[in-house]
Image (cartoon, rainbow, N blue to C red):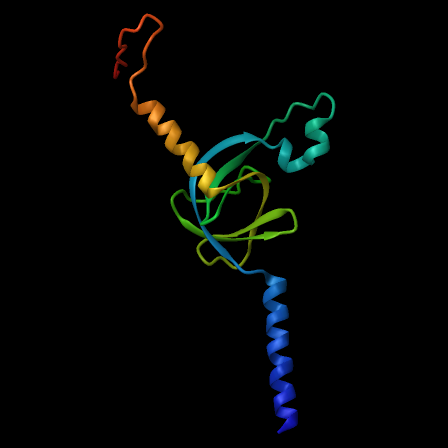
Amino acid sequence: MKRTLWFILFFCCLQMARAEHLGVYQHGTVVRMHMGDCAIAHHGFMATMGGPAQVAAEVCPEYTLISDKVVFVIVGRSSNQLIPLADVIDFRIQKSELAVRVDDARHESKFNIKEMVLRSEWDLVQKHIEEQLSSPTLPADGTLAMRSQN
């Protein structure tokens, strides 16, 4: 009986250690993508903040990923690291990178984290931008200016 109890305890501890090693996946939605310079992905902080950089011929995808509490801006390492927009993806933070698993794929894609902001702050900024775009602007002379819709 004691051996069985010790075996069960050992198995539970082993599973917890394995889950901690693998990381717990969070869920997020990709809402924006554009192609940008790969300098951050290839060289890191010192090359970015250092002297004149070499001209980069390659462009990498940059995504905005929204989770429940944090909004991430992540940069791929190469131009072929593509994530579908508006899809819910699984991700985890591994060291200083974001490991992304799309559509229950067997392997993870690694992305460098360019920016992180709290979801509440990001929502406030987005609300402010929407208010600015929806309100008519007043020129200096006080007359109402209308935007043309071409």
